[in-house]
Image 1: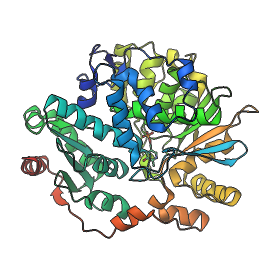
Image 2: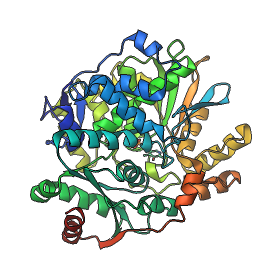
Image 3: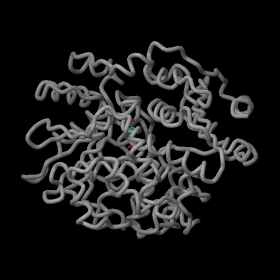
Length: 463
Ligand SMILES: *Cc1c(COP(=O)(O)O)cnc(C)c1O
């Protein structure tokens, strides 16, 4: 399998480029040259199969040039062995027509672990083969940084450097990063906001000599390998719920459009679906794009679901590319227009035969709070504020009789205890392993929002 850039500048990248570079040289995102189709008999055999084996089957077409099936299976088995549920991603029935897909059984209690635990091992495996070392760097507003630290801690061929805005992540999120004792983990508390952190990371990649010197690599949400790993749980849940015969509708809380694009990938690979519901919070640019055909970023609102407080959804570029006939020039033009305030969705997008698969719903903070309260009252189950945007969409978007919704439960409610308790009166407690972590000593480096100082520090840390 070779990969193309969504902006047309690269047409034959291999999987190693895609994994280590993240973004294409023209600023576009990588997609496979064509969508591989899984044999329906193989997909049927997923029923009752262990998650790590399903994962190897789903990802094999993408990694065939670099890994054989047994190597891939070995990596997925290691990646998912540490989850605290034997099913890895269990599905739980909440009501007659609603199931929750529980994506929070990994070490940092959010769905980012599903991709990151695999990618950490994949990086290590490929670096060892090539006898290379790398420095993984990322900016985080909370969940991605913790998931990256857990995925890379203690690995021999990588250093992991995370920049986070000091005092702007939750106590649990910070401690998940700063209590990893391994020498290859470096957490930088930046005196600035998330945009400062992200900007500094981008500039470090732009400084070629620095990037080459430390072997810079990223695992942010545009990395194709993350999307690929996330498409697995659509197959595993459909297999266990009979979704191959009776297609399911998936309801997906969305920020950067990564998780829901992974659902679209599963559909392209041959998984039948009754729909994909884009659930946003008050940052509703994607709703406006699907409903009104206008993609216009507004101010970022701070909401009860901070991981979705995003206006420009990076991965949406991949869907646009696929819907406009994979015309990279056209996509490059649209992306440029974002700087000038946005664009009207092209006609090919709105008229695409797969466009009706998608619908979109927004939930403001009041709706999120109401959804947590209603769900608790009706089912006795406690959900987090991100998952609640999906439940709001489930309740407010009609579906044909006989169709069942699977709502993606993105994070454990104990990651957002204040919002959850205010909404339903229950204070969710952390699982044991994390509660213990919260007592351990913290280790971090305080830096000003200054590129030169941060780069000097990173040089000395990874030397
Ligand atoms: C990252 C994240 C999201 C948003 O996912 P995208 O793939 O960016 O759409 C939603 N909820 C939680 C808890 C997250 O960590």
